[in-house]
Length: 597
Image 1 (tube, rainbow, N blue to C red):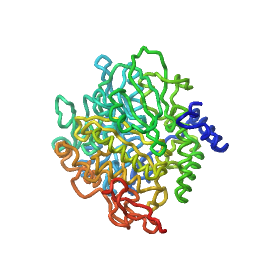
Image 2 (image 1 turned 30 degrees about the vertical axis):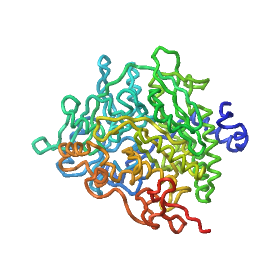
Image 3 (image 1 turned 90 degrees about the horizontal axis):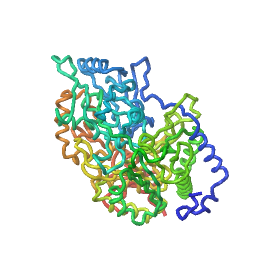
């Protein structure tokens, strides 16, 4: 068994209880063979399509607010979409777009108040046309990444880079700047492989209250580069055209190493391997290197990337795991969290994170497979309704995973220092980051500069940290809360990291727009396409620096990332958590458990 190695000694496996082994075996069977209950619709209405609420796929926004709307529209064609936008514009109603699964964590889908309109792209999910000779494909904005990959493969074409979760829609990826991992070519952002965008925006009276913009680099480069990452404030993306590549294969090997020289390796590794990324386990002092390169399509191999945590899971098993973590949090059992984290890391590495050489079993590295089988996954979406016996593990209808996601792109020139600062924190308290490993570790992906006005500014590494959030009480502090807060502030304030627009807590967006050199150009395009701001909201005005502040200062606000603490009341003083300086980055202000001894 590969898990018994210098990385994870065999005695660590012998300590796994029979009960844990039973659950892992049972869960594995269900992950592999069971279908999952499909995700919930993020929009719920009281009467038909009126008097509605909207949420995200996790069931809660960072501030836990309820977002309401007067109604939701489900256009099935561009003509219907045009009619919806024209009617709302004529009535002066606010509009926001909601995707099929609504995966964005921030409040990008929310309208202001209760009188706005939600426009769902759920049924705008068709391939419009293909041109195999030109290697282009035009799709509607509600097409999922999975469908895009599959339809391209039928033409022996491939999208070169994409996120690893295929439940995202084309419009959603463009709205938030979603990406994979690469420094090669044009980089890993999906929006940089577009040649044309059709955008439906408010129009003047003479235009019938609606205008369809056809945007391209050649014809209208300013509008095109603004629309690539739009935050939904320019209108509704109707269709996009992708420039694809001939189908190719990838050769993938996962290799675990000590993180002793990780700071140096992280800076150069992406230049050596086209699809490189890392899974960092900082409390364990380990890094899983993704050695992943392009190979010709005629190389033998039918490998499949079916990421284990994205498969269907038994709802009862997920609930048990969540209950265990909640008990550990409430009782302060950090040691138990670390033991479970080590076991999980061992297990996932031992099954190669779900990689197989033929779609069924793993026989050894490298795993070679075609791009459409190796780039993304999301098997828990392959669903039949089974009464929530199985589900995606974050489905809000079960007591499952509930977490924060902090995703920040640190410039490559600062990456070594940032990594070393995190290692210094771990040295102070080795147990402090075990919660990250219970969420599979820190996913680290390469991104590069983009011509998109709100895209990445320079070569960077995107650090994606997923960690525990209390489901019931926003005033409940986390174990070692101060360590995660310090990392978050360190990245933003010390190393000028840029936030992922579709993830993060409120504080990550505070003043972020000032770090985009083309922010003013974006705002000028926004004024041209939507001069009345019908697609803008209080939230989008805040993150774009137009009005108000994205942070919310109140009792306990720092616990949920709504603010950076400046006084003890922003933490949980009644539970011993006080606002104190950081341990490595002294300028940070974090909620620290203060000893009463």
